Image 1: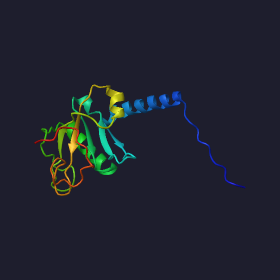
Image 2: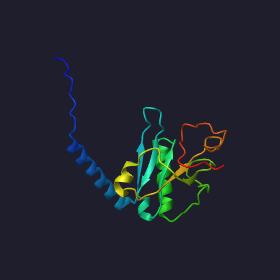
Image 3: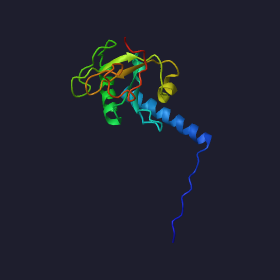
Length: 165
């Protein structure tokens, strides 16, 4: 008795479309109950960094938030905590340090995204083009920011805005 190779079944375009519709509808249910979702996109094959982004803050008149370079668990936890704070009414000025999102005294802050380098699929499926995005900027372990010369990981966090002079 030998092993038989399992043949893969390719989904039809109709099956893919039906699964996509079901996914979006499930997301809408979660948004109605939880208020937001944090999505994780893994690192790309060509070295693109992983990232997380929110969906749902638009319904509160806020920007969705994207963060790069924290890994799935930490990035998701950071965006979860930030989203809960924003839903509770906390607001942060652009560039203002947001305390307590990670251990240590790091200068995490929000900047308006001027462009996107990665698709935020679910956000587009829920809102079309009617949403804005802010990038949560994270410093390196020396508290250097990505636009500073001493920043240790230049490929870890693409900037979605023009860095300050």
